[in-house]
Length: 276
Image 1 (tube, rainbow, N blue to C red):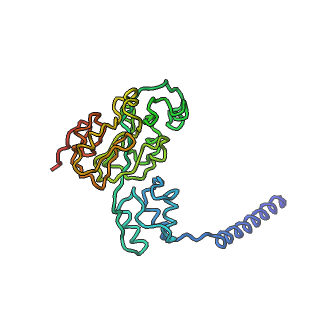
Image 2: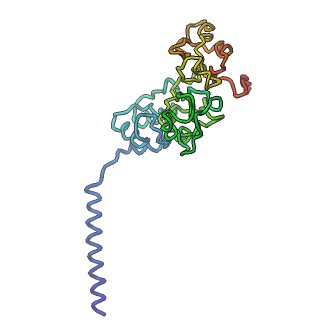
């Protein structure tokens, strides 16, 4: 019986000694965390989208606390988060002066012919590696398997009629979707840039007609229509200079392929009524 008691006592003493050593070591070797870093991390969206240029919200918070990153780089948080971060850092608030959103430069989808039926993984990167450029006859077309949808941490992009479509009003411009697109069809545009070209093909019109019913033909009609020198056909593709565009919408109305996109119009092509 005494043997059992001695064993319990010895084990208790050993546990107490090692507990003391671990407690002491945790204090001696503890990594000090800047309180500001924890405060900043708590107000960031936590989406880890990478739009700020850092691996995630934690890395961005650490960079701000260390004075290595600006307080207004979080597109997802917007100006309200930028103001709170500036307050924590004791600096003047810097607004995110230009709001950017993602835009998909393709409207093909179901309007584009296919070279073959793809039966592999429903992933754009996997599909793009089959047959050279994927199952679509258009080498520049959106594959429509939703890799960008899966990448968006906010649910502001979806696939409609075989092509990815961004929710212009709610997009925060983190561009996580762009990183997931193997065709590099998703670009960053200013939120105020209402007029955009929904095509990336640089094929000549005669070749493009064979596989797409909606792609840019390089017909120059939009270029001739624009009174502000804001749109030109370059390498068979219409390109808009947003610094000159006044959003008059004349090119939208004149495009015979209806691929010049106006963010102010809803899916039915009608201007939304005021909420007043």
